[in-house]
Amino acid sequence: MEWNTKKINVKIPSYDKLVSDMLQAEIGLLPYIMDACILLTGNFDAVFDIVSRRKSEILKHGTYNALIYSGTVCASKGSKDSYLYFSKAIQRAGDINHVITAYHRLIITKLKRFHDYEGAQELLYTLISKEIPRSKDKDLYMALFDNMLGLAVVMEPNSFSLVMAKTLLVNATDRINKYVSTCSSIKGKSQAERYKGQVAINLVQLEIQKHDYKLAYHIAINNLEHVRIYSKGYVAEACSILAYTQYLLKNYHDALMTSKEALNEHADIGNFDGVKASREMLISCYIKLGMKEEAKAEAQLILDKSFKKENIGSRK
Image (cartoon, rainbow, N blue to C red; front, side):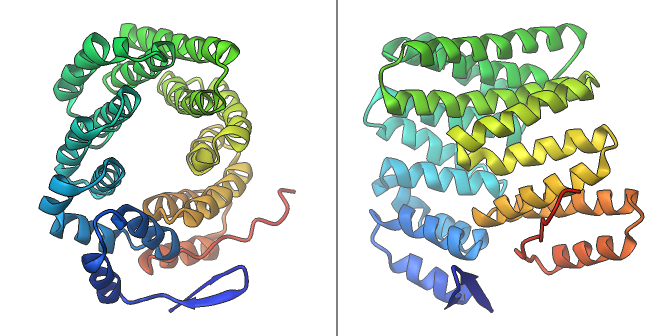
């Protein structure tokens, strides 16, 4: 198998070779090697294997970054070992902002991956009671808190809770805008703009639950423009949610083109789950457009676990 980038052919190591190299890697370099492995090969399974086999070593000696990365990999594979890694990262964090970041990862994992609402609620209470007040950037982290709480409410909706969630998410956006207008730190502003993109995606999901697909679409398309400027790492997710709103509005051609872009973005960051979900959306669009052969070809690429990119071409 060959991986081609920038016209340079590089032979991808076998699964066993990847695992062997990462087993021998110095613990301080491990997160960077795992990141390179996923970026270049897309092999989450090999990295998850290492995180599992070196679990006790990472928990005992791993850096904050190693713990965060290991927790993220475990979460992506549906393993509750992510709880252990993120919890240890909270203990090992060098400053309060890193503490809050680790709490954020843990809370989002409990909410999105495992629907552990009670556990997330306990952590949210600790975060707002003890941790956020310690940060000089408390305005920014209160926006992050509102976003997480809003997400929790969205995930267990009723007529009243949807209003509450909308209020929290709008408040989060307002807090971020206020923070950006007064913050003198380039790093702080960049972080705030990234959070703003996450809030917008939750707002899109909320409007979809309310069946206001037009508003969801407008939020999604504005957010895609925003993340292209401020948070390129979220372009894949922003494209995916935009494509879904286009599909709900029965704009199947637009949803097809946006899904192709989403797939290519997911492929660039080695996210097979994102690639697979994008191909599934492509299949749905092709079927709606009467393009059965194209749908079959995408289905085969899913079976092949292919990272093959899509030819976007013209949107006309």
